[in-house]
Length: 108
Image (cartoon, rainbow, N blue to C red; front, side, top):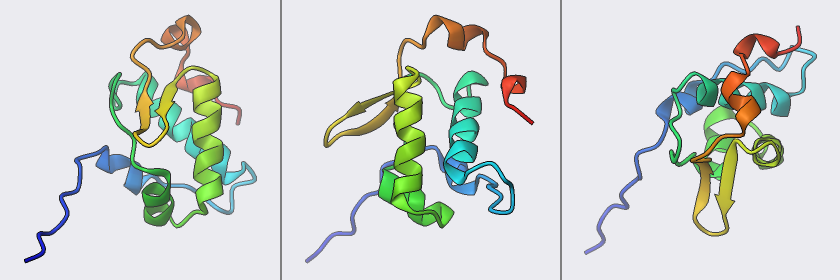
């Protein structure tokens, strides 16, 4: 008898992000800003696991490369830590400048 796979609980609100394809801002940057904002406002806590890139891409109707570009930028800036085969996590120690960054720093 096959048992149903258990889905790990994850930040469900990421699947409901409102990204606007008509916005001149590239989708990967919109996703980057949305996740960064969730980290800075505490909706994503340090150590929280993000959904797999394939899952998030499917849920948001994006290509996986779009999600990977956003994840890579967040990792390069110190917001995310990735572990091969284990997923992406909010960094337990955020860069010092992230602690003083505000969501309003996003360009118009």
